[in-house]
Image (tube, rainbow, N blue to C red; front, side):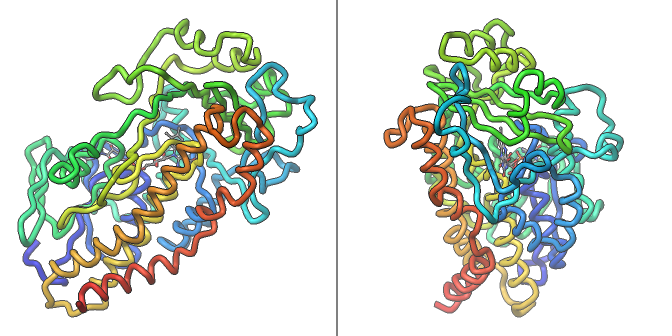
Amino acid sequence: MSGDTIRDLHVAIVGAGIGGLALAMGLEKRGVPYTIYEAAQEFSAVGLSAGIGFGPNGDLALDMLQEGFREKYDKVCVGNMPGEPQDIYYEGMLLEPGLGLNESWRGKTAWGHPDYVRRGVRHSPSTFKSFNYVNSTDINQAHRHAVLEIMTTFISAEKVRFSKTLMEIQQRSDKVILKFADGDVAEASILVGADGIKSTVREHVLRPLYPSQVEPVYANSYCYRGVITTSEAKEIFGDLTDVAKMYVGERLCCVTYLISKGDEFNFLLCALDDKPWELKNAVSQQITQEVMLADFEGPGVDERFRRLLKKARPVKWGFFYHRHTSTYYRDRVVLLGDSAHASLPFQAAGAGQGLEDSLILCNLLATIYHDRDQVAALAPYIRAGFAAYDAIRRPRAQRQLERAHEMSDMLHYRHPETGKRIESIASKLQKNWFEWIWFHDLKADIDAACKKMDAALNK
Ligand SMILES: Cc1cc2nc3c(=O)[nH]c(=O)nc-3n(C[C@H](O)[C@H](O)[C@H](O)COP(=O)(O)OP(=O)(O)OC[C@H]3O[C@@H](n4cnc5c(N)ncnc54)[C@H](O)[C@@H]3O)c2cc1C
């Protein structure tokens, strides 16, 4: 980095998860200089879930970030089973014995939208080969890997630095200095923290003014998860495996959907928790199988879930989230994806919000880099651009996070409006619950962000 004019702009992205890679894709396409620094030794997904799906907003953001993504992505997706409606997002049923199969509401408790198309990701044989999987744990990650693998095809290899764990950030008036665990030091005009829920960059952004907001908050809930073959799942659930399900219940719930072109079945068995999370620096905890099985004991739980739980690994995955975040930036450093707005997973919309962050940010940066005077000082543009990004992205991403929490309350019979009635839960989710997330005008967001930036600069 030589100076601090617009033509010197260089973006450092920390973290090569879905958020960081999406930003890199967008910057690559728009010809804005960047480098990604990733702690892992290779592109990898140490994510919590095996499968991942994006709503229509996420699909659209990916399309707008990089033409050609969608075509590749469609090839690794799977919806509900062939013949079943693809516009069903989930069908609600009960966790209690009988699952509600003989109730009068059966068949009326699905939610989705006529313009929604269910698409979860499957792995491809080439994905397995290229990532050199050695055991079943790795295979469970393959579905998320399939997405990351496609993303990386749009990124120049020489712009990625692996084994770079960011430890320290220093901001100067004209640059950001990044210090890594191996002793390396790098400089950039701006730093984008896409380093996930336990973010080093978030600490830097929020510690001075909002120290209580740095750490993710335990949501007093956790899950057990697993991926089994669909034929194994059919032995337990029969044709109920065909359409994605949310089984709701008193303090417990279960989410299931197909992945791997319908060959595999992804499940999460979730429980509320009265106690604080025990481990200080880890969001997952190895436990015994007895302790795990005890969570789903009792007459209120259908036997089928106990059979399913026996196929999960005895690892408790805590649900953490960033409930309050007063800003997504500090001077030259900005947050993106889970570092900004880690969420509970019940709307399957967290990564989609990270894609939207990337879309807005890469358009702002491209506007600065290509459409403004190359010799103008960069600093005012960074200030105005980050303020615009924060103004457009933060309210929407925080709303998603609040609603995911509210949805958790519904699924666990804790919501004051819907109580223990599946018909009320389904009815609430059927009435415009998801539309504002899925069918949002992203082009209007880009325009509004650019306008805000210009307005701030012209003041
Ligand atoms: C159970 C579950 C299911 C979900 N399902 C969905 C779904 O279906 N759809 C959806 O949209 N969302 C879903 N989500 C949310 C989604 O997984 C996350 O929002 C998304 O993966 C976050 O991506 P990210 O790139 O921001 O962070 P991450 O994926 O966490 O990536 C962060 C990267 O930063 C790197 N890193 C961390 N610290 C450093 C450091 N100091 N230096 C350098 N590198 C560092 C890490 O190695 C990692 O590669 C789900 C979440 C959960 C928990």
